[in-house]
Length: 332
Image (cartoon, rainbow, N blue to C red; front, side, top):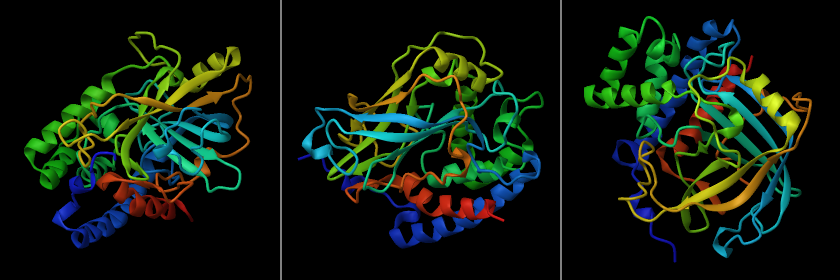
């Protein structure tokens, strides 16, 4: 039997009913975040996070490992199965900056399309640890800095806005605010060579049957050490994929205990060995024009191919409520 993770579940506010109230308020707040960011996005209501798509692929191939353990088999995760997938790479900010070398994180949304099954989404960001421990802290950051964009204010020429910092301190307290700001500043400073050479992490767990785990994409091309990010990541990716396939491994880290794999703390890394469950292949191509509009897809960790798969943790429980509210805020 896998380790018991159920006793590690902690609800926001201390109880499930209180958490439902908190999440309902978050759903209202995210609509205001979208509205606040619309002016910075040229009057276009975009995603509250990951507003700018950098590259989208509609012909990706998702190959499940042949040695997948019995206890991890569910929905589209069947040994040796091959499925089509849609992949959307993005900058993480809620403002679509025309320059990709602006300080930012990067994200990937992966939708696996298995015949006869519901779609299955895997959402990840290229920082192993979240700047927020839980959904309340994450929303506090979004609300406090939405009006002018977190990345531009934290590392821009004028530095962080006083009103944003004050708002964050009021919501989470001084020590948590300092920890959050320090983490974000450190993560945003790191330059990347290419979207094709980054690691991408779920930072929140899922359940497959009785096993809890985090997942991540590991590139099969090792990144180079660079001192700056390309101005145009789309063009960089285009040149790379015109020459060869781009490949990643989807790997999982099983839950062990609260000391090494804290279930509800998204700001902490997990210290268990990773195991490959699938390979993601972006086929060689000279055309980055996708046959689908990845920006129109409402990706969600709750979009799963089997009820045996369930997102865990307050981050994911919040996404179940907040994501649809953000989508409705973008809809005329």
